[in-house]
Image 1 (tube, rainbow, N blue to C red):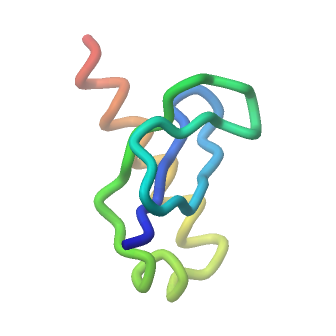
Image 2: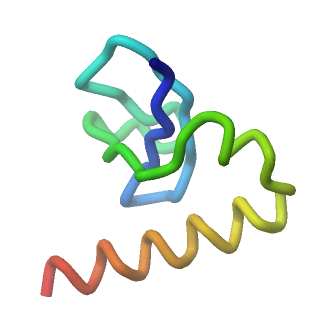
Length: 66
């Protein structure tokens, strides 16, 4: 199963299977977080929809920290 991971620092995404520790290629952060998106949902989105989703996801993650 392929999972969509998002970096909490730079918002970069990676599609990964069979890994629990995922390094960000954008900023080098050692641990990205998995999103709730399936590969099909992610691939069906336009780039604009992906950008909007990532912005919202990052906002929610930042609210969880405080």
